[in-house]
Length: 244
Image (cartoon, rainbow, N blue to C red; front, side, top):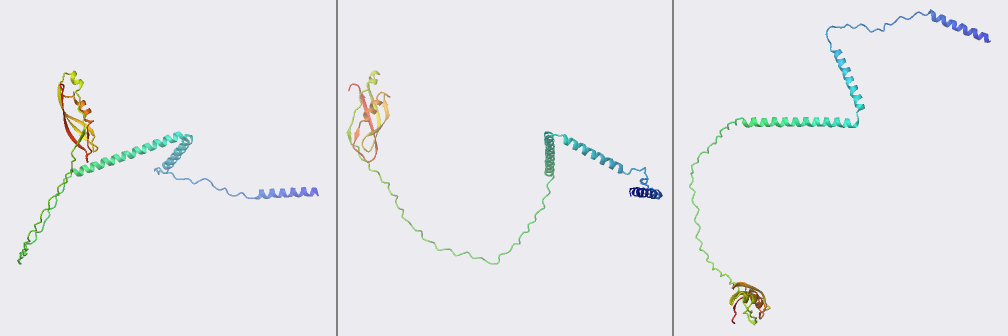
């Protein structure tokens, strides 16, 4: 049985080899591209292809450089690009302003157009055919005499007469004695309150000056009057004589 199997395998292999050898070879297919006629005139296709290749090369180089840049380099480039853009916008605005100023100047220098004359039509005069009568005069009205009312007389406040209850006479001051002053005279105004007390003394005139003022003030503040309805003032005069 084993021998039969080996013999069968040998027969199958031999038949396969024979069938392969008897097959006719297939015709060869020409894979080469047909020849293209080359014209002497430039077509521009080669230059376009070269430019595209150079562009792709530049993009590749830019990508390589961008991949090696740091964040600081990228920020710096963005800043420079922004400054360039701002400078460009400022230049454009300046040029626009200059152009506008130039246009306005040329417009101002232009001669104004002469205004067209305005024709005013004169209204035709109409002759008055009817006589307008004057309105009748009004009857005179008798004037009404109104008696003037006299202005009210302001009420005069009643002044209560002053009644002196007690007084103190000033003495001859020592400073006047040391200054060899033998006499003097002082005029003063005193202010009296409603309870009759002297509240203030004003020196109006003193001869000689400043020798008898303090004595007059000290003495007048001690004067006492009877109560009154309203505060009053009074003029006093004090005479000084060393012999008395």
